[in-house]
Length: 414
Image 1 (tube, rainbow, N blue to C red):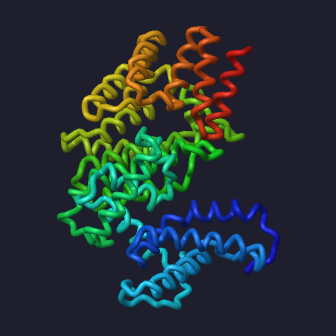
Image 2 (cartoon, rainbow, N blue to C red; image 1 turned 180 degrees about the horizontal axis):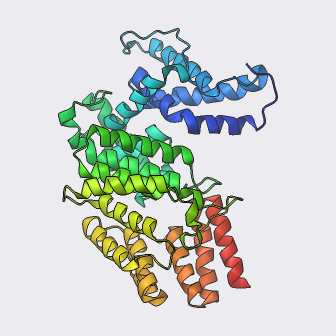
Image 3 (cartoon, rainbow, N blue to C red; image 1 turned 90 degrees about the horizontal axis):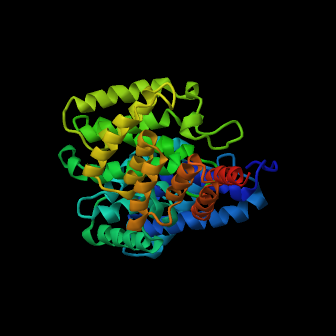
């Protein structure tokens, strides 16, 4: 134990630890207990004990290892009380091994958890939210934003997925090689949504969550290695790398959001862009394009442009139209509308946004209002733009995005 006064509040230390180690902790506890709820309860109880023990005894040298040991003991106590549970073969009940000493096992647990949640017996609309909740600790609000549905619907889907795993006796294991493709779609969807949450965090004060971006890329690499002949696995990895390459330029030295057209492209990671382009070329050589490859192609066009003015917006719009034909989505349509505005002017983009809004799916999404406000601002319609910026502020929860919208609103007032 370290008796020195911590540099930050214990609550923030605990939150940071969970953000860094939570996926491994949950996966290990689920392997131990065979029960998603029991694992979550054990971890929550360990967190509650930490808030009592750490102020009294001092901050542990390795907070993640402390949570690992305590949560496993809590889980084991619960299993002892439940006569229907048995210990896994070879498990050492009194072991105090921490995360650092079990890193290889933790890596395997995360992959097993991902494929367990994505079992073909579970409907994808249920399995993907469960994986996002269990593997990455995303809240129901964050998952609801990803699916553009109500939080109550997400909670119900997670409950149904857990029930299906329990009643069907789905094993916590990595499936055989020949069974991997049937889970591919759900696995890639989880990885994609994890990265999206990391790249534009729903409720964090910072614009991005580096831990989620790194975890998504790690899982995407594993998926591509496990299924090297699956073009969408290659396409997804290419997409994530090409997108990740721009992340360093998305905020300035103060952490303020920098829009794409204002970014210093010298800060983009050219190594990641080169790797992403090479992966995209490999995938496209199979001549079996899918949604992730199309999105990767869009990201590649951004990566090739030396400035916003030199971006091939016509090709990007064509690719978005192709993506809409594969995967109709109001979010995709929103991006297509922005691309059209870059070609045909803000009025054309606004007309498409009107169609999207009339559908009702994005009525409470801040990005729709922010896009409308930006196009109105470019047309010099400051009062209308201010109204849309206010609507975006009401819906936005990310601190960096809110500060950017507030600056834009102030510009309209001035």
